[in-house]
Image (cartoon, rainbow, N blue to C red; front, side, top):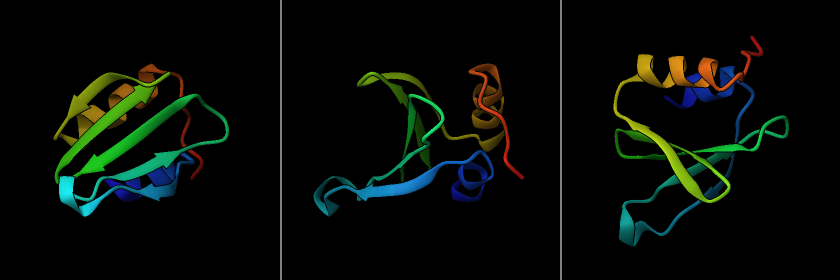
Length: 73
């Protein structure tokens, strides 16, 4: 999923505490959405609220497109 986020212009900016499974936080300068990867789950968040959660990379890509986030590559 990391490669997909990089394709859509997101970058890693923070790693959470290992005590809760080491979530990795991604954001983009062009959108207000953030994505959290924890294990095999991706969560899209906006304004501090979870908007979408999935374990399927295809669903994640479809949701990014639905939210108007365009691929950079």
